Length: 163
Image 1 (cartoon, rainbow, N blue to C red):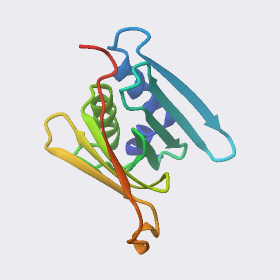
Image 2: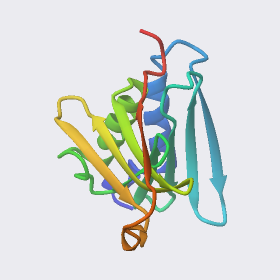
Image 3: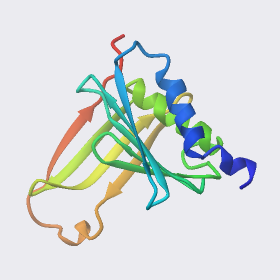
Image 4: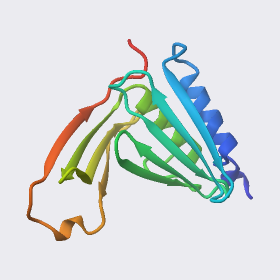
């Protein structure tokens, strides 16, 4: 494992998460950690106390290759060990920027459903020093069914801690 992948270890990602939430008022967020020996993944789930704040799930591939993230209700993001997914920064810095944006309430999401099932999502993230970043998700094959009722709902998430 080279130096650039070491930073994507579960321990490195956990350190970033704890650094970001460490500045918050106590009891504003719970962090659940699960280590899955069968899948070689470690997951972190940030659950804010405020119901209007976005949850954040990070699943770290123990090999150090990737971090999979779910922002809010269903915006998916994958960051590989090279970084450069959303910014020109290294991967661990991109993870920190995303975590900080979520914790600060700089994320909103539009979710489309059909018959109560999520078929599409558009997440809009405001990273520090960057223009808005749009992250789109579309359920496979949902575009093949162009007809039928589709509902959408906008979520404007708040910061984890009151200002």
